[in-house]
Length: 248
Image 1 (cartoon, rainbow, N blue to C red):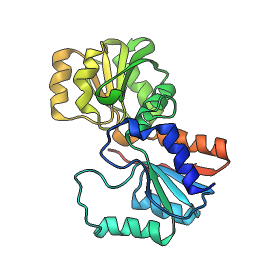
Image 2: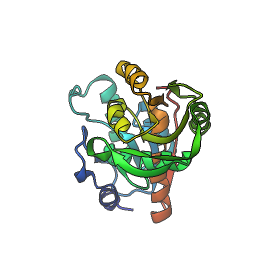
Image 3: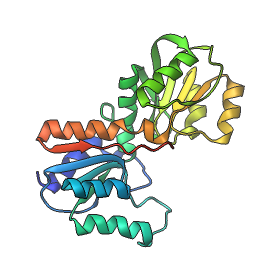
């Protein structure tokens, strides 16, 4: 498949123009014109790039790419090595950040709900990135924690009474601790995201809404994985997702 046509398709599918983001979405580094094999991952780390080179990939597809707003612009050290790896091997880097959180079927939040069995009912937060809905049945917070741990392969950090029944849930993958107050406003009994910051403890205690920090990486594995599978099924590309564990 032509790289140009692949990127056009992804842009039409994920509609990055509808979201204000802190990085460029779509093609970030241009490689060879023909794409037959894609390596997908959460973050375009050197480890993922080296894996792509060893696999003979034509493109790398990620959620966390490069060129973030406000970061150091000089191409030195780690940045030089990463870009040199891509350019020397003529490999494209394709990245979608907020568009891959927000997509109603392939996005991180949609996929997280599908894997955990949650029933979405609406959106909230800036640009409606966050989701809210309900559990299939009311369960103690401790049960929800164990269910999440079984899906994600790691126990979430939890604030709240483990014996309390929870039925309504709000969630937003990644570093969305800043959405906690907006999640509370949805009527949620519990809010799940990837990370936690100091004020979240007090807000959880004072609002009575439980807080689960389940890992930035862990909650954002499934969107790019679903997107790679979609490309493989639609275009017959060899699209392989690889997960390098990250405890953060």
